[in-house]
Length: 116
Image (cartoon, rainbow, N blue to C red; front, top):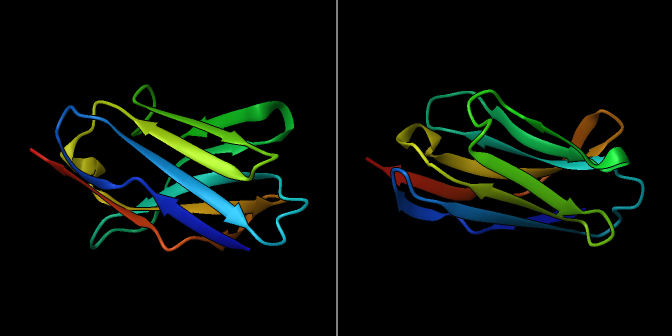
């Protein structure tokens, strides 16, 4: 399974960005997809995910109310609309594919930089 994330960039605080992720290869049977991020010197952090069954979405506390996740199971695509961005949102954003309750495949990430 290969994942390609795109849409990162530089934005001013308060601005918006939209990320996209496409999964290809043997993706049959995956239970969902998710976004994670990692800032320099910090641990990887859960951002958001979607579980295909019931189209249930989840968000990390730091992004609730500002980010919106969506996806298409049939196309193995995942999106993240990020609004009201803050400097602390600066990180490399990774998408991942979930099987069961574990994220087994990860993309290379896309840089998001929010200037103050």
